Length: 108
Image (tube, rainbow, N blue to C red; front, side, top):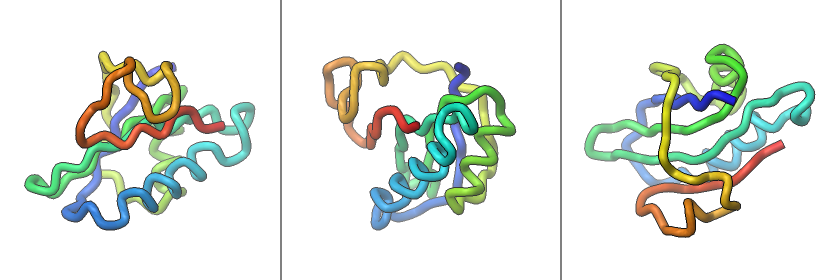
């Protein structure tokens, strides 16, 4: 699967955990057969008023659809290459903590 970053305006950390829960639910809605989009993680940059949400999905359109279902208003959906090991399990990134990231694991 291809990874995509969904960029949205945000300026507060309050509510980021709840937003992540909404995104997980929207990304996993219908199971992997109907919606193979996976939410992986988020990073908030309050100084820039941006939040980046990392997904895996079959297409930019599928990821945008999951983001919109979660109530996000995407500025951009960008194909992304990462070096972080999200495959290692929930709450872990290649066995190391990554400050600022909420790693939610696999949805679906």
